[in-house]
Length: 273
Image 1 (cartoon, rainbow, N blue to C red):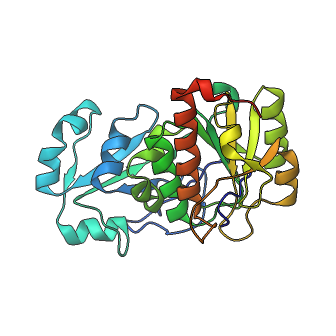
Image 2: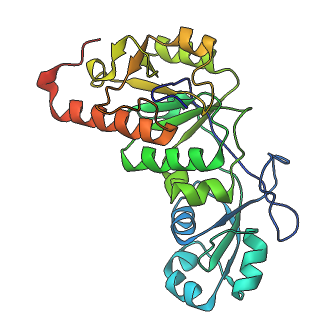
C-alpha cells in the first residue's frame, strides 16, 4: 500500500471448521467457531470478558502456566501433545502449546467507542497478517477502535489474532456496510477525517492533535478508493526523510499514531487543520 493511503474502518473474522482443522480463509457461517492459538493471543482472549471461549486445548506445561486464567474462565483445558495441537491450529501455525475454540467478537458501533485516542479505519485491507499487525500497532499506541467493512476484508482468525499478539482483544471493532457513508456519519459526529496518502496535500502533523480524529488507511494495492478519498476532510502525507515514500499499512498507522501521541504531549504546537 502507499505510505499514507487511508479510508474507513471495519472488522475481520475467521471461522473454524466443524472438525479440528480450521479454515485458513473465508467467513463461513456466522456461528462457526474461531480457532485462536499462541500464548499472547490466548492470554488476551481469556482475559477479555467480551470473548466467549468454548473449549481449550493445551500442552501439560502450558496448562499449568495458564492455570489461573483457565480457572477464572471456568475452563478445564484438554491436555494434548504437540501434534494434536498442530492439527487443531492448522498447518504451519505457531501455537506455542495452546489452542482455544471461541466465538467471534461482536462488533460495536462508533457511538459505543470512547474516543480516548484516534480511531483507525481500513479501506479493503485484505491480507490477514497486515490486519493483525495493524491491530497490534493500534493496541500498542492506544487507538480507540478500528472501523472496517463487512466485505473485502479477512475473516477473524487465528492468523490475525497471532499477528496481533493480543491486539485483537483490545481494539474495539466497528463493522460497517459502506465506508464512505460511515466516514460521513463520523464527520457529523465531530470527527476530523484524515486519509493517509503519500501524495496528500497536507502534512499529517498539522492535524495530529485534533480530537476526535479518525485516520483512514488504504489497501495494500490501490490505497484509498475514490469515494473514500472524497469522504475525508483532507488527504494527509507523513513526511519521510528517505528515498522511499511508501510504507505498509501497519507502519503507516504506527507513525500516524505516534505523531498523534506527540501532539497530545505538546499542545503548544497546536492542532489546527
